[in-house]
Length: 109
Image (cartoon, rainbow, N blue to C red):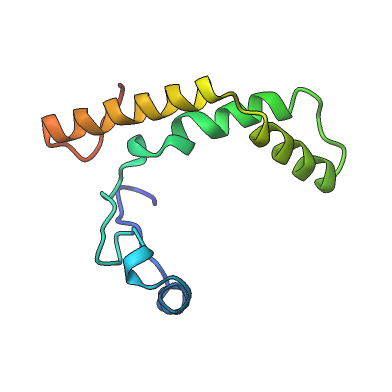
């Protein structure tokens, strides 16, 4: 997305997704179950997981792509239950804030 444009999906990609996952399993602006446009605020991976993995993985600077993949797998498998619980609780608070204030995008939470 750029300059406030709505997300878009190429027609052939939508066809492939429908063929492999059906509309019932797709959550996207271009499918019946729409994800709120321009709303990265409600994506746990954006606000927690990617930063957590990046901080931990790049401390040792993987030397190759296979090393990077192994490091990602290892760190994902070793995420503590308390960390996941905290991420989910924060996600719930974000969703409640969105519903309560009828917003689609929150700058800071």
